[in-house]
Image (cartoon, rainbow, N blue to C red):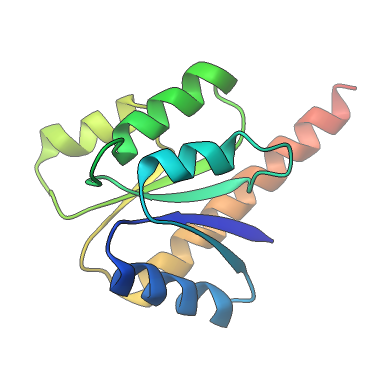
Length: 133
């Protein structure tokens, strides 16, 4: 399974890529929000996106809003990563349409747990769509 990773910090992108590979996922890398948005518009777009909240140009908040405006509540599953732990900012992430958030810095196990949760939700959504057809 492919997972989009959008972060302007190349060291952090590589760290996420390594963690995802260890968990048997393929990382699709984007260095900013505009690149992430372009990737998410493709027909074969990843169904899981990890977006950094703060990126130059289009940030994770804007990407999240654009995805939800274009697709409603449907896929992709969006995990926002942020170093801002204020309650107001975290609520803003969720109101923008993110499914979950993870505070930076994080432990790899925390990311893996959130990946598992996101995959479970995507699986349930897929089953629900199949049952309604």
